[in-house]
Figure 1 (cartoon, rainbow, N blue to C red):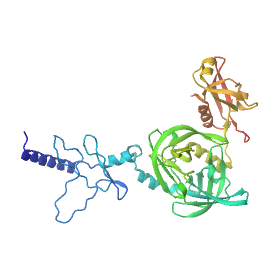
Figure 2 (cartoon, helix red, strand yellow):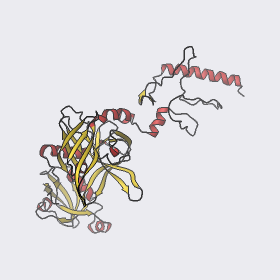
Figure 3 (cartoon, rainbow, N blue to C red):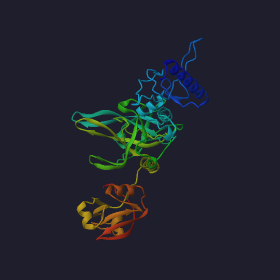
Figure 4 (spheres, one colour):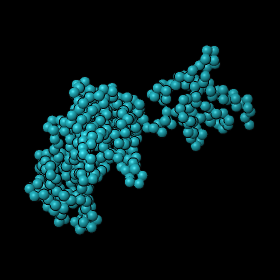
Length: 414
């Protein structure tokens, strides 16, 4: 049986070995809550003449040692201990509570927010609304992302809808008047411009690089609280968001990063510090209100539409000229297919009509991309340009046909 003296000797030997290993090993970064950054070590104040303190011991002291508790003196909320009583590194516990994606993008949320906040602006909008008592001046607030250093800012179309006067507040606090360059209700994208030439333009990423579970950071002005930063994850990709009396928004990014009124038009940023989406909508229930689910327009879409608005004042929308929906199980059995987009109507004189598509055709492939649903077909069409010729594979009466269509510009009345 091991005596107390032997156990104390074993403990001293272990501590000396650990101290030697600590001096020679490369220190792991830890989270400093005072500075809000990752640092090599957390400095501990030491009084003159005070004996040298031992560093916090990361590994657990094994071998059945009972009653020896190694405490970490760190200004951070009470740590959660593992079921096996092994203390975990402070930065690991913080990472579990608030993701930082250091391995994914190489930066913490603090670093990313510091770089990205100068790109995001607050947008105050004044407009006139008709009421029973006459015209009433109302104001609203939203957010925007600086797309170009020459003053072009991308936001949501619904943020500037009906705007009379627009004021943009930069991260520096400067307030500048702005004007609407162009707005596109179908994609909910708009561009406003301020007269400045030295603005910090956003680093732009792509939805194609996103993965579900990745860190998502939202920056905007919720309820008018400028330069607010919230964090969550990418919850899903390719979502459809239905809007009352308007075309649905397709291929949206879903996130649980807290977003509310005023965040619209602000930035959704990935773990690498690039803008990947423009925050646009939240899911809400009439019973419980906001559900903690938000949606952002992929920057691939918002950026392309913004460029068109800047260059010509309007956005074009590639158009096939069909209506339809998803195939039902009954239709699948009847037509001998498992998936595809069912064509219900073909617009006379439209691109589909000219290409030879007919009602009851099932689109199985578009430009080499398999089509499972009508939403898939809509998204695939939007990835191309007006005037571009594409190849379609359709199923008709059990036969697969290859047709070629030239995409048109969607009429404004549709």
